[in-house]
Length: 387
Ligand SMILES: Cc1cc2nc3c(=O)[nH]c(=O)nc-3n(C[C@H](O)[C@H](O)[C@H](O)COP(=O)(O)OP(=O)(O)OC[C@H]3O[C@@H](n4cnc5c(N)ncnc54)[C@H](O)[C@@H]3O)c2cc1C
Image (tube, rainbow, N blue to C red):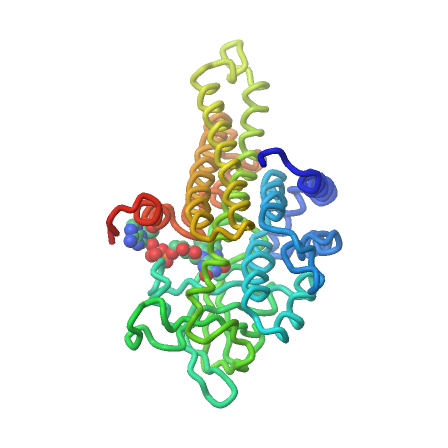
């Protein structure tokens, strides 16, 4: 159904209220201080929004990605997107709820829903890059523990999380018949001995920042394994597809945020005795940007609905296409918004050049546009694998 439900309208209203209370200035101040948006997170927890996708029996709202995507989209639209919301309360919560042991669900899910604990997600490695099957972080069994060694890269919000959900190899790549075998998912306490963090100097202004994470003989109880050992790749896409849909929702929201600024300026700025928005050279690109953003919004909503409906294959196709469409639409909208502002577009007061790296990042993260196009070429169009 294309019409938003009453619940979805309530979610949007809630975000607008929260944005009025905290707003973009609060978010920017936290980003500049390098501090977590603790008050905003608490507000989301109190409203039941952090637990939205957690089953009711574990203290959550039992809703789906459709509703969560509305929250993420509107937070982007208000200029207050939170990356840990995607990682902690969508991806990691889903993996624990779907594949964790009963004891694990009882231990983590209610606390995630109440905002008392946070998780980050550690997949990327310096050498493996987009080829996640080449994950080299190794977990070997030693008595009732796994012993972890390796390195992860660009991990968001580790310093603000209590746990890392880490993708590891329990069987080395060289020893498996099929590259999909031998990956496992482990929950690691951020404060465990042998875990160390190195902050990365990134140019993306956001309250949650990136780290290189090192594991040096870290002992992890075997009870922290999610699902079966070696079957991690089977579970992983139940988190990676929602991540792509969430990234698309955030991109659509941020695209609306910048486009609205561009339209307001195009109406008010007069040069050559006419508002600049009266010139087709700007008006048509603005109209195209609006159309592309709304197309991406529809596709994102459709992808979220497919994921909630349980059709994994079609949901994966639309998750990839929605992420591509939304990231492209938002990047183009932001570039255009800067252009419309002329020289002012480069002033931090106008707050477009400040948001540009974040929007542009969504073309590459969580999965690059080239890898998305590879997926669509191979799995949607049925073309030969190109790499
Ligand atoms: C701000 C930020 C936050 C992040 N947060 C997290 C996080 O919380 N957790 C996490 O695990 N990771 C995180 N990442 C990592 C992110 O997911 C990766 O950077 C991204 O998936 C790309 O991988 P890579 O950097 O290794 O690029 P590479 O894999 O090295 O790719 C480099 C370039 O080569 C292209 N390329 C590679 N292979 C092919 C091919 N077969 N065909 C065509 N082109 C190809 C890519 O598209 C890309 O343009 C984050 C990154 C950033 C910048």
